[in-house]
Image 1 (cartoon, rainbow, N blue to C red):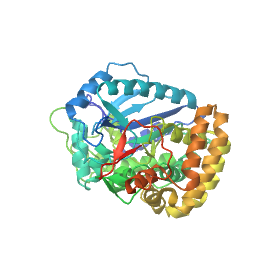
Image 2 (cartoon, one colour; image 1 turned 120 degrees about the horizontal axis):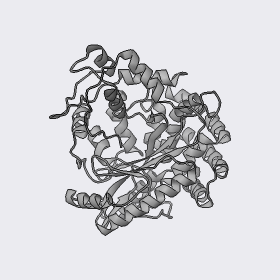
Image 3 (spheres, rainbow, N blue to C red; image 1 turned 30 degrees about the horizontal axis):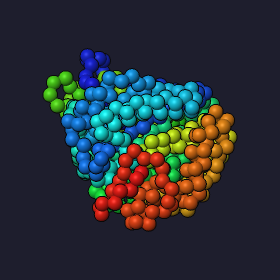
Image 4 (tube, helix red, strand yellow; image 1 turned 60 degrees about the horizontal axis):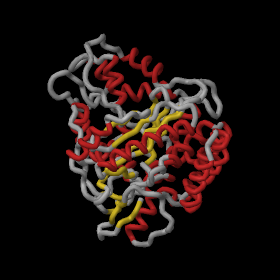
Length: 445
């Protein structure tokens, strides 16, 4: 959610409806050979000694002040509930991306340890109710807007964390690496990635009935704010229409709180010019308030993967996703594997369709998603050496495939097993903290 804009800019000419469509078409899909890769890793911040206790705001402030003094190649931002996010610079290779983010995470963890704090890789806070840490006009307006659809918005803002993989949009021309194919693939393979990496089955110390509670919160926010457009052979046109017809979250102003209109789409705003005519800056800001599972920002931002357990758990979804999109052979295999899943989507946009709902609720216990995941992980493993992946990366993906994918499991299943006291399988990833059950047992993540 690292989309914060500090405030308003000087008044500029208003944009018309036609200008909005042209601008969106021009800026949201930058086509060309897939050459760059990026990742955004979000983490919950916890007390190292007693992770079930909330971190006092003053302790977070002191730790974040210290973090602001260290040099990092990635951009470090703080989320509304105090979560930390590292956003890598565009990398020319998978190993470059991993090396940059790993070094930055080492530096961040070292500072946090000095404050007796650590990072927790899980998609949704298993203990705490949403609590705002940041008080900024953007998040005040966001909270007001999202509260209209229920409590899911506050949970998304304050208690969720993810691994977001950023890929080039792809070639203008058709084919496995063409932008039309990659857009379609992202909305179907995305459900498989969601299921394979689901890691948020708990809220308020209890199972929610969903293996990805984080994705459930996005679904509950509603299609206008957190849904994708209908899939179309013209992704640019589909996204431009979606942007125009999406509700405006807020109208910024320099003094006082931002206004939060109800039921006003950007298209209607351009036509009415009220409460003031929208500008190009307003359009850019509006697009940062839309949270579909795949967001075009020149590149494609895949937003459906839960934060992962262990210090290095984020590397596996990054590597698998990069392989299945950027290696032509793996991309073709993934496309053929997920094609039958399109029927389950029933032509409804993600994530508000049966395919995505089943992926979030059941993970790889869903037979068809399991079968597709097995094929896709095998294809990714074959492709990773062609992308220059090191042995430690391919070994991590192979271990994940054996531990979870081949068995029809995901990290959320481990958390539920530990909660129930069954503890299967017994091997556990490396940890920076633990998740206690309501009965006081400590279950390492």
